[in-house]
Image (cartoon, rainbow, N blue to C red):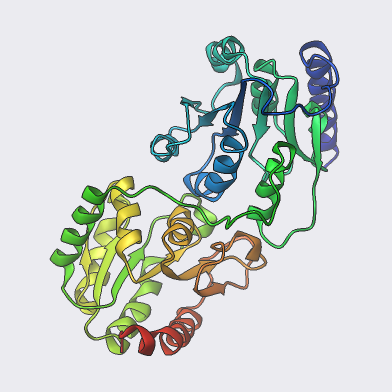
Length: 363
């Protein structure tokens, strides 16, 4: 603990020095965003789910004035989603690795002459060296972020961190400096879904079965603490088949998980399908019910208003799918989903079917 405190102290000194040398001092008051052209960069070089949750906030900033040109700094994972958004001028991809490998990117950001840069990574407790260098590299006088976190001196527009019920609400606060009011719109994300991709998804569902409801079961997660063992899905799938005998059940996962998925599929009359990212999003959009640990597809379900049974760690309610119908089931471990008992998930499934099934013709 003492060594960590020393390390954090050294990091704070380095970041303070970088801010003093390259930060350009204190930003002037916020401008009239409609007075002249402004170029804005939003930093979201992290997970796909993080990006999806931020879509409407980014859209609100881009639409705050017709004079704003809006760019996104994306990760290799979420850049394909960023490129589908009609309000985005340029998607710049940044892979977080050894710090100095980003030097060519820093030069590119400086050449773009940004007026404002927004740090969208509100979930992390410290503004790390990578993010600080990206913010400073832009040369933007208005560096916007939530304070109350470690190393937040890099911001020149400091937004107080509030005790808000969902992390989406914290991202919404980043749009405040652009005159966007928290209650001005529905903050559930909207992901463009081309007709051709939706038609492809419907055709894929027909290879699984023609019955209703369409139940999508996702095994894949981006972080090991959110993983739920494949064998625990077996009683859940049996209950889906028992309660919803006409359902079409599609199981998706990473290639390494498909062998285990095959063993789950046969007894439940389900089918395992290998899909790429955009196809998974289309499957979520055309499903009636999603069963998944907390990951990017549960946030996509919020975008497509797909009923969701979400599996999460204890005390992580702020990460639940935003304003999404369904159920969230928590494990008793704040660090892992794995200990979550199947019986608890089955009970939540029964409750969900009892509430939504009759009106929707599932049962």
